[in-house]
Image 1 (cartoon, rainbow, N blue to C red):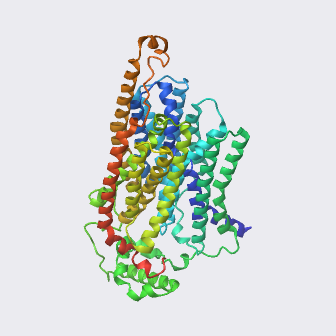
Image 2: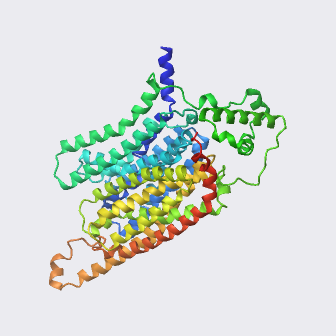
Image 3: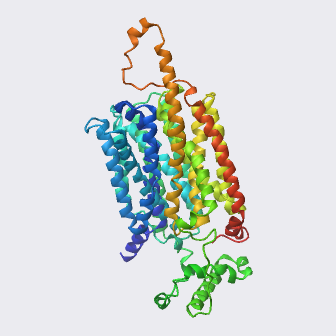
Length: 595
């Protein structure tokens, strides 16, 4: 009985259980990516034009990315409390919007609707922050894959929720807003006590590589399955029973990764974590005397004091030697025999506070490059409903789901390939982001000229490129500026998303779309008067004009393509500036096994 309780305790505190629970949490956390599906409902119900809708999109993006409170609460409060705050904000914001859209609550001014959209979407920042901070601390040696997978599931949540909505089969189009209010709230409350740091750096096992392989396999299977299901439902008339079966299989695939923590916790062959035997734990008297107060500074001496031949030793022996040296340094510092280095500020690769990072050029290169790349991608995502209508594509939700799927694959692939770049070649991770931005520039031009299958190709290229950013940027920030203030750093960088969308969507796409729609409306009004007497009132006097044809977004897409090229240039400058940092961080791992 005691052994079973110990295994259950190990299961609850297993870092792979936290990772899998964070994946499930992220599967419903990307509510902002459903804006392309709910915006037509809001536009028609509240009689908004495209410029007003663009303002709602900016409010949504601000809510999605302004995470200062989320970052602060995650450091002050337990993770479950921060997640609960996020769930309540999501339910309150989108729940009130649903009441307004369905006529159950009085219509509010545009600014008030923007506030509700902001509050509702802002709950997502709590989900993202809790998931990323917990799992990056639990997997400090696998930041790229962990960030890519978690951000990937957030991007895929649009397709997952769309499939669930298809199964609901509600004739009321406003019910999708209700689902956005309820589904993330329920999932978060169910998982909020599981997603947390559990000292995962002490749980490294030889089977971790196989576990990541299984996770990647599930990701590829999930994306391929959802893409196939969406295409079948778009091209073939299927019954509601078949849709239910499709959705049940989707849930089975999502639940599959739970076998990893179950096997590691209850299998008799699971073994002992590798790191635990070699971690040097400070003694109680050392802690009381303050010897560990400077531990972070002392550990920076480790590389100076470590003999070079240590890196050539076998893995187990190397860990023992490093642990012994670390203990000696701590003891020597406590006795005053070692004078630790005091610097005016941290160097890149060490722990920065947000204020320290804000005065670094590299931090702003990351921010502006992210703003140009992800901002243009998010503009396409937010305007996907109107973009598909202008190009005369039916079933807008198909493209919302497709760009969500490719966004997911981009995030997973971005984490995977950027990890190869840094681990195998010790080369800066942002080089992969530069390649993604170049591909996005091509995708914008392809859609702008309405080439064959424009929106299908566009969702693949733009969605994948957009996803690459959100696997690479958080991992890069943690490598250059440390993990100590990772929540604050990450949430500041996410501000690049609404900043870019404010420029490209609200100031460029919205006004250009409305101007072209007004031109087309004036052209239709110049038709012979007798035709007008019959058909002039059919659209209703207050209906906002709609734009048709590739001209609606042509100029916007060409401008965004040019800014993506500028993002490529900035990313390459960042690569040049950080080559020495990545060589220092990862260069030694090429000649010695990674611990």
